[in-house]
Length: 170
Image 1 (tube, one colour):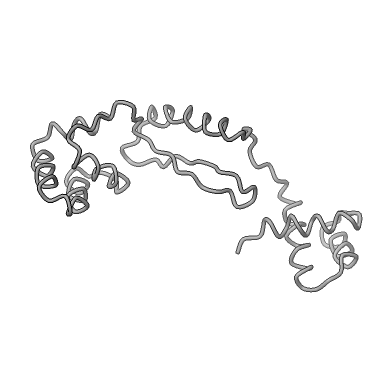
Image 2: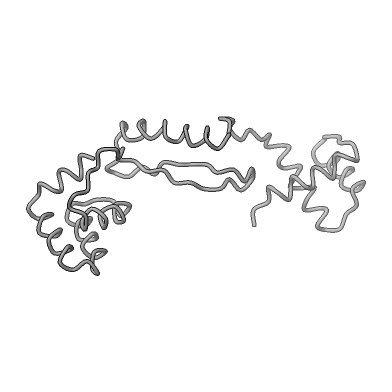
């Protein structure tokens, strides 16, 4: 990473690095000094702590971007996002893209995006809320037809309730 190389050539960074190596218990404080002095995003803190204590660190395979996994609340699948900091370049983001795609491939995930029909989601959430209110499936079926103008067979109401429960927030 170019930024690590640039930091290591700066005399002020070199002084902070020397102090961090002499006082490794305070490495977090020294990483914060680097962030403040060189106006870096706080997302650099963990990497800087490692770099400050490991003089032989080489950033050869690093892209300059990171990926953050999260669990999709609806599909329960692992998804990734790329935090973009002021120091992140377009090349950084493009270079991490292939890594993300390989992670999806390893996990057996396809590239499909969540393509929910917003109207159906509203109906599912409505069916779930009404079932929580104690209404029978036939009553929910009638209300959906009245509220949304959509007809569902009685056996579909159970599925709508189940899907609505999975999509509810909180």
